Length: 140
Image (cartoon, rainbow, N blue to C red):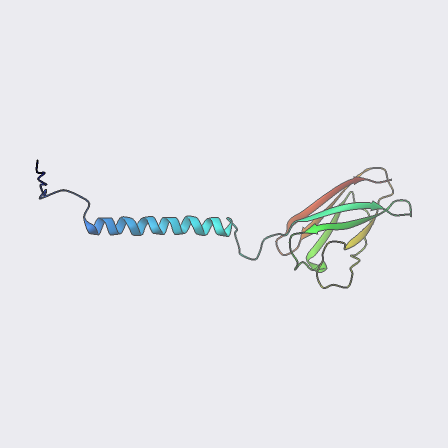
């Protein structure tokens, strides 16, 4: 038996112009979604606030504590870009660094918390005015 194929004339389909417009629109939308995902919804490329992890070590002198950086997410944070805020207010000395230009793991500063209350240390990143990290401990 012989098969006969019929060609359909006047078959309706999407016109080539409309198909091209749809493909361009889909490509633009996908590119925009990919851009947003890659940029991580950030408001400004280089203005992100680094994150920092701190630890406390009691010093031999009663009431003195060494606050050390355990880790930091950026290698370009200068000591002058950070404000140390201690609540309730107590004395916090400046950073003791190993001679490097930027802060890193192992750099530390001292606080004098002689009262047996809860202290919160907040490190604020000056360029963005956001918190980099906090540490809470009881003095005494």
